[in-house]
Image (cartoon, rainbow, N blue to C red):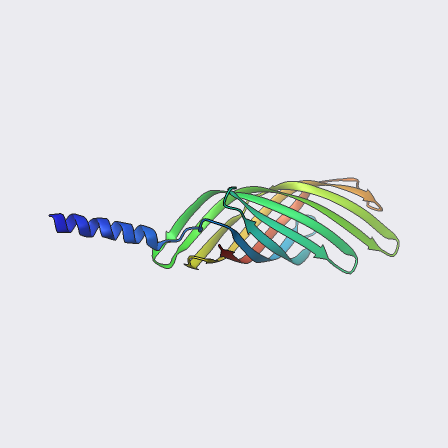
Length: 175
């Protein structure tokens, strides 16, 4: 009887430790993004820096857009409402989050010159795999809805709805 209990306890401890979930500590990574805007479904690719501090339950994304005629800066912050394993044996899990974004963009080309301030909410839904304790790969879709204020040569000074459908593919290292 004692051997059975010990074997069951060891099995439970080993299986619980086998799944890494999202590791604790500092997380830093890079995210490739592709966003489809709600107005016209114009697509735009980008790169973002991913940050996770151990003191806060928020996953941060910092993006700088440097284009031929556009300069932009965008910050996202997502809180994971659900963060659950799918397949413990391969350290695969899924998440559902609720977050927000703020951004600043400056466009200038020939006779058109405008600045926009944008803010809204996002709903990231994704999967991740943690093959080793310090490395994570993730992919998600993140629909967003918000508003934008435009200044300068732009048709509307207030734009609602603003946002779109984002696709993120990222790598994160944990320390």
